[in-house]
Image 1 (cartoon, rainbow, N blue to C red):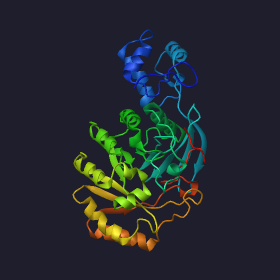
Image 2 (image 1 turned 60 degrees about the vertical axis):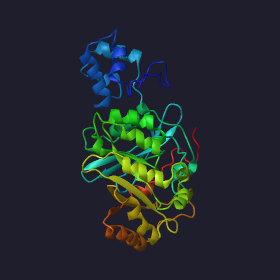
Image 3 (image 1 turned 90 degrees about the vertical axis):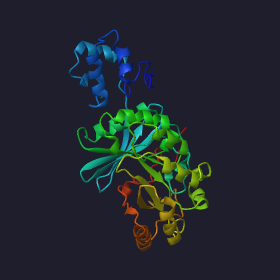
Length: 353
């Protein structure tokens, strides 16, 4: 990752800077390695919002750095809070791009849901972001800035955190940005507490598999036949179901880890008991846990789609459990503020380029 000028000035933005980048910036100011490490720690572990926060640096050095570089994160332009404690934050980048990110209090920890793109080109029919269309990738620095902003805004520094790449966009269509962000996140968050969710971009899975420190993997499956999956997820035409399953069988897993299989249940589309009976065979031999997600409706963008009845959800789950699959039903948080799975939209009704 190399430094580039911020959108507000010609000075480089140090958010996401490597130690080598910082050594270059400090070369004629104070090149001692421990100074580089101090600045790096303030940016990646203590989330300094400005150079004045760096209290263990001499004032003269802080002033010199402020004249040479900036520390710039996305701006919080809107916050909506649900009764269950979930917060949805709209974050604006200097070029005008707006994404939504979510903070979910959980038992014993807080989960941060990050967006990797300003829209989504995958086009899943059950996802508002996909219906609104594609946008640009966020860089690793922009993704890390998103994380820094959430931690500071919600006063989460020092708390137990999980991070999930499950917001707007397809993470593995932005695999370079995600990989760069993972390297920064792993300074403060264990890879076992980070999850990347994908619709099944096979080349991206291969790139994740190469990492020495791999995050947890979640696959948005949502169907048990190629025809059904293409109808719900057009991306399946590029990476067919059998190719995706083969990639999951190859994916390296540490001892005790499982791949999370996400299955959004949509009434009359993929909730037939035949689907439930096919799913165990499809996943046979792969260490998985299945997360059933009743569709989170949106009357404006997901017209005609609804979750199944509670009875059908229970029947579907019971068939999977009888086949000895580890299965849970996710009861989404933040629905009242459109912060749940598939409801994020960024700038409402716009297509962002």
